[in-house]
Amino acid sequence: MERIIFRKPISIYNWSIFAEIRYSSFVKLRLSFIKIIKLMKIHIKITDLKKVSELDFYWKNADYKNLLKEFGYPDVEAIAENELLDYLFLAILDYNPAEAAAVILTYKMSDKLNEGQIRNLANEMLLDKLAEEYPDPALHFDIFNINQFLRKAYNGSFPDTEATIITAEIHGIGEEDEMTKEILIKGLSNGLRESNLVKRLYGDQLNGNLPFEDAGKVIWHFRKLSENEVEIITSNYLIAREDFGLMEFEAELKYFEED
Image 1 (cartoon, one colour):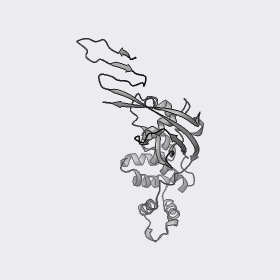
Image 2: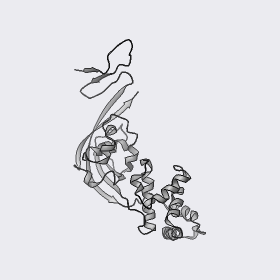
Image 3: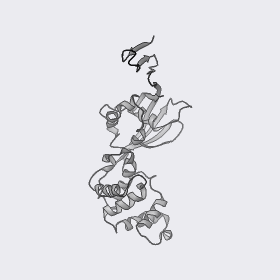
Image 4: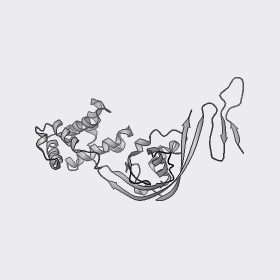
């Protein structure tokens, strides 16, 4: 049996009528624009969770060669590939930390930041954990990797920040449903304590009340290890081991759609 709740009285002066129809499947409709909440139920078992200070896939040998050129090294092609990083660290140490940070930020993020923003970021990185605090979370993944690279080059002069790598078995995603960052963060949130920062920041998105356009700001990277196993990378500031109240759980995912 359906239940209809009129949010505003019907009158010839107000045609903005909102009716909420709740079925057993919890589908919601609004007559002024259509709001649909779809549900998916999956089972998640976290098999491994670790805190790391660097992500080995972010930097490639091609990056080291390009950066050596940016730092003025004259004969990059003569360097053996297994020695590129050592030579790059030596080249970096000819610059002060803020100057080196500006060079690397420009190389990696000039398509996202202007010259003034890069200069400010390069100076602030020495003092603050900008991989956690920078106003635009979409940039935290790049800032994390650059910060940790500089921290290693300058033997700890930059603040330490950390990432979380979660390995999980996930069952219940249909063949027609592609695994996405939205599915992963909504699924994981079912095992997180209510005090977790993600649940406090993105409650409406996690509950399907709003579109979750920020899922990529929380889940930095993921890759499937097998049909039902996935490796997920996020900020340890957002999700740490102690944030989980459960390591195996059923997850009900709610999706917002709007026409």
